[in-house]
Image (cartoon, rainbow, N blue to C red; front, side, top):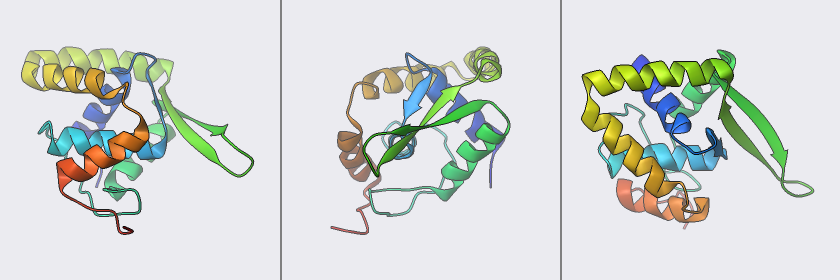
Length: 146
């Protein structure tokens, strides 16, 4: 079930990145997991053990909703002959919505804004492969494969 608070925090999570882009579905999953379990942000996404650590179907659905609403732009980037990565970037409409969300959240719950801003800034330079391990540790969920 997609919740408007979760969508707002997801938009903020993307918008707080330097280039307003998150590179990879795995990365977006692990960032949200870490923010929920380690940083105790009020994300309602339910995570379960999966191949690369914790995974949320609700989060994947929310990303798809934001793409469908033209708030996020999904780009498929080839990495190798048979590999590719999905990148998610705020559209112009998404950037305006991000600004409104930040103003509203700052007025209603400045602690959430400061925690989210600090956490995203600290996590942004960490490679996705390391985020997988951090998400597993934060959530105490293993991968379904060893």
